[in-house]
Structure formats: structure tokens, C-alpha cells
Amino acid sequence: MSYFDETSDLPSGLKGLFLRSKVSLSIADPNREDCPLVGVNEPFCDLSGYGADEVLGHNCRFLQPSDGAGPVRARMRRFLSDDTVTDGKFLIPNCTKQGDRFLNLVYMAKLEHQGRVSLILGSQFGVRIHSSQGTDAYELALKEDLRQLKTLADQRDWTVLGSYDALASSHSMIARLRME
Ligand SMILES: Cc1cc2nc3c(=O)[nH]c(=O)nc-3n(C[C@H](O)[C@H](O)[C@H](O)COP(=O)(O)O)c2cc1C
Image (tube, rainbow, N blue to C red; front, side, top):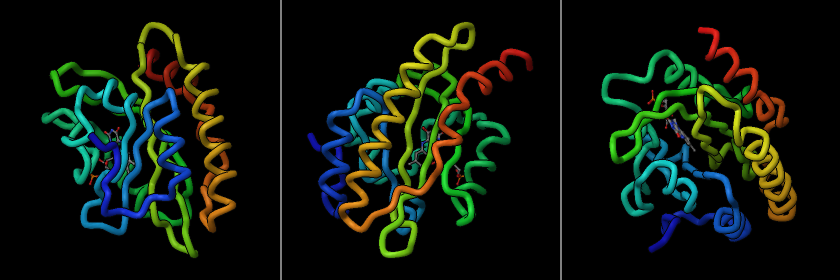
């Protein structure tokens, strides 16, 4: 089974990173119709309950509940269509394949190749509302993945856009959620 759409020419360093990473990673192609996923990794499949073959080629909104995901969905859409914003973090209700609801903290960063946004990197973290357990470890692991990706990208004429500022906001986002 492949975790990547073989018709998309993903940088090999990126594939290696996906296979090594302990956090849920996904990658989508914004230049194809409806921005489909072209790569996921095993932690993504573990979190969502879907096999890679079931999700590649589909827009990642299939994770959202059929009764809607609230206003955050529109914020994600605006982020993707606004070239001046390079990365962002979103807390959105999602469902696993088995139908279990969970809150997904989705981080997205744009990857540029030859001056245009060519791929969108996504990372997912299933939030526990009553404890921040795992949040720090997740942020650290994702930060290390991004650092490696930036190094790889620099060598291959790719640029990982984003300042990481959006990355370290999990605690405050979860705290805000508890107050609401
Ligand atoms: C790489 C990538 C990963 C994404 N991961 C998720 C996710 O895990 N959960 C989710 O609800 N939406 C995710 N999205 C967002 C949706 O695919 C979609 O962009 C969002 O629903 C807004 O667009 P729409 O209004 O056309 O659905 C991801 C998008 C990209 C590009």
C-alpha cells in the first residue's frame, strides 16, 4: 500500500519525512481540482481510521461531520485562498471513519516551488478537551519535522512558507475552547 499519489511528483525528502514522522501529516495539491490529498502518513491513518487508499485523491473535508463543521471551515477556505497568509492553525470538529467525533487541531503551511504555492502541508492532532496531555510533545515533534522539511526544501528549490508562529498556539486554543 502506498501513502502517496504516485502521479504527483512529490520531493523524495518529503516522502521520507512522512514515513519517519510520529505525528499525523498530510499533503495536498492546490493546483489540482478541489485540492486533493496526494500524501498522508501512518499516524494520519491511525487518527482518522481511514486507509491511505481511501483518502488519496479526496479533499480532506471528508473528515468533517455531515451536520457541518461550523465557521472554522470558512476560515480554512479563506486561509487557502489568501496568498498573503503562509501558515495557520484551526480547531475543527471531525469524525473518524468509525463515526467517533473528535476535535482536530489542524496546522497548515504552504510550500512554494518556483515562485508559486505548489503544495499544502497539513498536520492533525486529536485534542482531549479536559487535559492538555500530549500537546507539548506534539508541538515539539511537528516543529522538528518542519525544521527538517525546511532544510530539505532549501536544497531542492522549494520553500516552506510560514514563521512557526501559528504552531505554538495549541494551549491557548484549547484553553479558549474550555471557556466557551
Ligand atoms: C493539507 C490539508 C489538510 C487538511 N486537513 C484537514 C483536516 O484534518 N480536517 C479538516 O476538517 N479539514 C482539513 N483540511 C481543510 C479542508 O480540506 C478544506 O480546505 C476546508 O474544509 C475548507 O474548504 P471547503 O469549504 O471547500 O470545504 C485540510 C486541508 C489541507 C489542504
